[in-house]
Image (cartoon, rainbow, N blue to C red; front, top):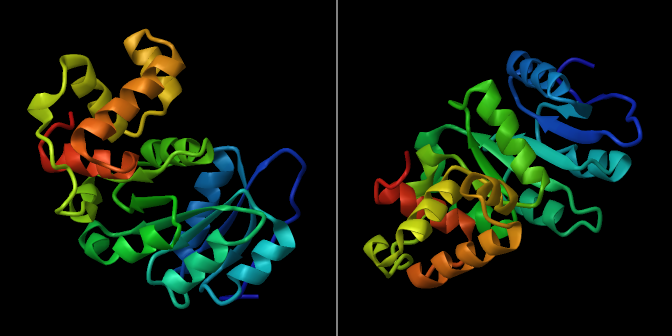
Length: 218
């Protein structure tokens, strides 16, 4: 039905996604990109009003929504985050809207992706999110940083810790950090925790935001 929810059959073992975007052309383009990236779009909608029922019906791995589409707000995010099925909740938005996203992060969203991302970077970000990490596009990171966070100066980090910080800001997982620096995944995890502790930050989102605000990203 034009403008309403669209449903597809899901297949066992696939990475399933529910997609919500109020522009039909962009929604269909995103669906094609996701399918090409080995995701299965099990349902589509042009607003947030049907999302909860679609999630209950399909139990997707991920819910990908346009921020500020009709019915897509912090209340919906909080309800999705509280579901036992636990889908990864991802928002797509323009970088200039990033100052409105603070509440959505607290509500339980896992990723905030810029519509300016290339197709390759977009799919890479989704893979990182699917592994359980948090991702915020660099363009939006600085605006999402709490000004009271990042109390230490990056100059207090060792060269290895600075490299770890840069890799975190690029969205690398602990496994990818280990591969890049030729260390074990466990060692990479320890480095990440030490960087967060030294900078007085709580999570990878804030580390990425801090690195962007300090001009430490490549």
